[in-house]
Image: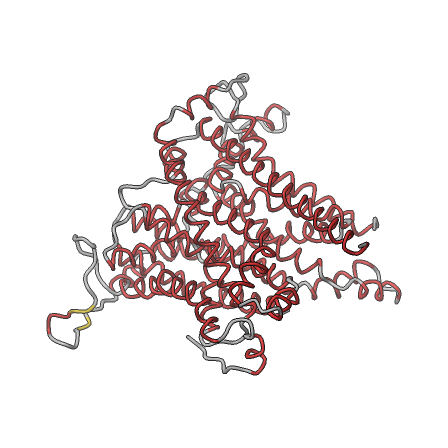
Length: 310
Length: 272
């Protein structure tokens, strides 16, 4: 994966501050850390996903058998993956996660876009305060904010009680432990991640384009549709990826707010690991999830790199 | 800039903020509930705060979490800043693509995958699980978030000050410490606070890598919440919200004063 970009004249100019050894010294600390604690673990997960579970410590068979001599015998097995295919539960959870993450991303976009637009077009003095208000909930405990929704959505919760006392409904609406509560939880938790990149994009948009369109007789909604919306496409992609990718693997929200019909892959992985203690199957679930997420992650990184270049 | 098109965004802003803040407001209100329910009001009381402060398990877990968060935030800020500085100032170098990838992937990687992967590494190399493993796992994803904040600041920096220092004979390391670090200070503080919060907040990764000994605050909260809602958790949530609001207010005040001082100095310099 390591691409070696040739040293260009420009880079050599930029390195005036730190010599070549100095530069590697600065980079090496975070580089080695990430190689060791971020990249290496994925190789190990991949490895263990091909082994089989045993009752031992650690509870999986070694993939390489070194007892035969210098060249190890590979004793890999596809049983972990076979297990995923044999039980319908995994396919259901997998597809459920994709569906829930997709719908949540769309909902975040529908709520987040007008909010980001509103902040970007607000008077400059008020803009930072509004942005602060978007970020602030993100700084308080995620777990406790998800927990707060239980008190609101359950049968004798705040929302049902309010609706009943207003006489709008007689029976409490089923809003907990179903798809509704999971969507509310995900949209609520990930909305700031949608708003921030959209705002960053909309705020730096050249407004003279809109003025020019208006001068030429273009109506505001048409200018929005043909100028603002296409120009904000990178922001839409970044925000959507920031919501979609973690939402696919979400565990806390389906665990606290979900029910039997909202099984998600993150919760399956958790159960395989903590309840069934089947590390190879848990690893196979992780690899299956990664395969799904590789494309979105690459798109996200491509966008990030382009933003950084600007 | 009030026109017809800004009506819809203003309306969604109002609804959006109501959506974002209603749960927090309701959480705070019911932390003062006299009853055991978190949705039916039974009078004002602060009993749940009293019980929280006498809950040994929660206090112990909170202390563990704070220790991990402080170490995590400090190391993640150092590593994240070095990485961010390298990425924005060093141009092309060998392995840059891989490095960029490893600096951005933790931002979106689902917790369950990171948690499982990191645990398997520790088991593979035979590292005893506990606070040290939680801290290492937290640093790994926190440093990516720190780097995002620091990079934005580094690219906005005026390089001429650093160049001036070096033209006057300062060595690169000295320039970095005396000129660059102070100019990056707001981003470093913001990054440190963010890394601290991320660590204090993490349930999933900590659960995987914790081992039997160490329990962090989110792990205790999660096990309590699974058994049912409790106003004690509301009280805990309220205290966290208060603490965060206080930290942000103090940080904002300090930076505001610094900015004012800087402006005054600048004006004085221009006059003089």
